Length: 140
Image (cartoon, rainbow, N blue to C red; front, side, top):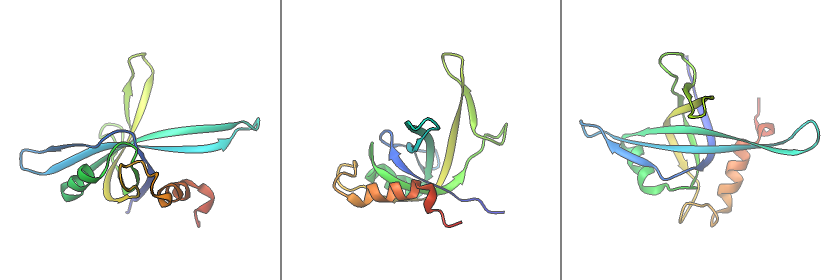
């Protein structure tokens, strides 16, 4: 079987890189995606989903070097399920509510932003992220 997960969004913070004892680079960062829609009463709404991204080896080093908070990216990879449940990782917040964390192991990261990472200099970044998020543009 085959699994491919694609997400477009913006980094919520600077990437965090570390090295394993064998020298393998690992970089983690979070990507926010926002879906805009109109509810049944005609009010505009937004729904933001946060996704943890894990990159390895040379890709990890490149992400650490070239990405920063608010960088626009498209991530291609596979979902990383919780080994206990097979679904998203669940956790209990300080207020006692249950949350879920979606995690992706990236195979490819497309850097859409230029300069300081906010994408303002690159109109393509805004358009590419919006196009990737548009549900109506899916050809199937």
